[in-house]
Length: 226
Length: 65
Image 1: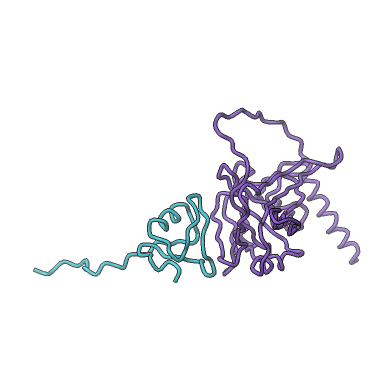
Image 2 (image 1 turned 180 degrees about the vertical axis):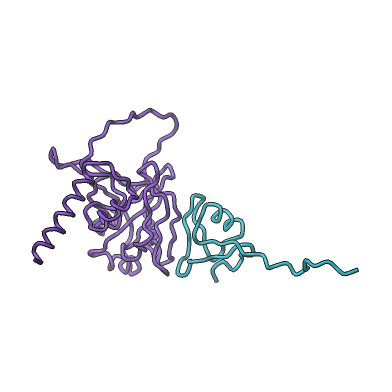
């Protein structure tokens, strides 16, 4: 009897997935929330497996500088998961702020000028493609303050907001797919060689990084001195 | 103390925070001014609330002739 109940539950879940796959279900619908709760699709993600017609891309005049100016990071455990923002009407911008738990906030990581970048690539074999997100900065120096910050990095699950040269705020990582940190410090061999660390964040996801319009609350913890 | 310069606004949910990065720059919460708080408030920030004016003490009843 228990087996029948279990099989029945599996059948219901399979039918639900089939229904969501077959039809465009609004992201804020009760069905979608239920499926998200089951962990079958990530919150704020576009529907997987949907083929759509392309929109046009128009050329735009004006300056288009490269590079990034600021990096803010927060450990996933410090984010209030109950208030994670939904996507706005455009489907690529968070409609609300990322809210830290009480007493927590983002850390601002300064880095050497013109060393910060981010990127995303569409990669994978035909039929198995997805996006790979990367964030990178060069953090000069190595001292006790910086070492204290690095000490908490192993296996951290990170969400980052990067500000590009156009002033746009862009979010990397989310509750379902947080960023994995990478760190490579080198002292240099000669007097005038670089002394610092390449810090990187990576994650695979099913969409390009989303834009962000909310505040970034910052805690004043010890940050690497640049 | 956070927001000690504020008169028309007050900080909420800001315990442990030092600064807020907004579309108009990084604001230090220790030195935040009413003008900055007003910008945050109108931008929909969850960290600023308007201070309610105290109820009028002039009374509303008319003097009896």
